Image 1 (cartoon, helix red, strand yellow):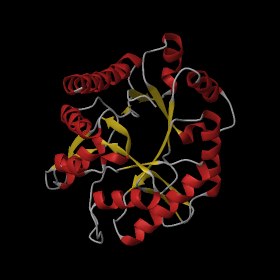
Image 2 (image 1 turned 45 degrees about the vertical axis):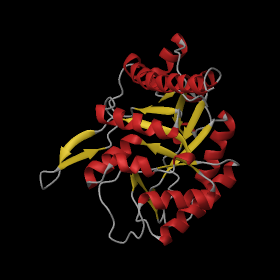
Image 3 (image 1 turned 30 degrees about the vertical axis):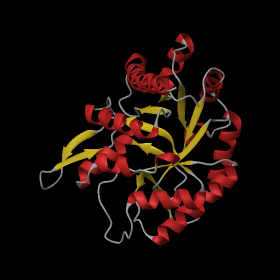
Image 4 (image 1 turned 90 degrees about the vertical axis):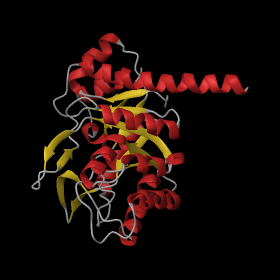
Length: 285
């Protein structure tokens, strides 16, 4: 996967992409949108996959769920993976199913030894089923659990150590969580296990107020990336180096030129990092 910017693939942009052939690094698809056997989505995606790399992002595996992974869902996920051969595969540190019920949200979990064991067992199962390592995404959170016995950073680092998975660092999720819970996003980035980062996500967030009047950010994915998130992205890249970066815009999806401009903004930052790295190498070489 090139260390460039990509965007989430949306049906309303199929014709623009195939008609104009934009200079973009890659596209990400939600696996669950392509689990049917055929039809127009697969026809368009097949044509786009012939031109561009893909990243496969799961939203329904329920890695953090207390119950067993859904074997049928995992089989469908493997079928999409085998059909399109994505360069990267990622899932969320969250749960979305319990006792046969499925929820339309990615729900948080406490960071304990018990949940760590569950998450690691599920990652091992998913990686074995797909025959490849996965990336685990840090969540956007709105509360903390009194039962947690470790930090999110320690939880993620230990998950990587036990399973060999990689990490997807969602910078907007981090900014949302830090604002809502009152911790330093910069300190989180500075302590993040960046050697495991295989992909970065950027997105827009909505601002609200909680019952006390304090600022509450919502991971809305319905607008452009905010200036503070761009700044946090630059700080992140100063530690990771160039990493494939996704622009997520899943709600109130704009026309293609608007989304493409966001990707070009991320590419400009990545290109600047490349240039400064080459300049340092030239001075020391």
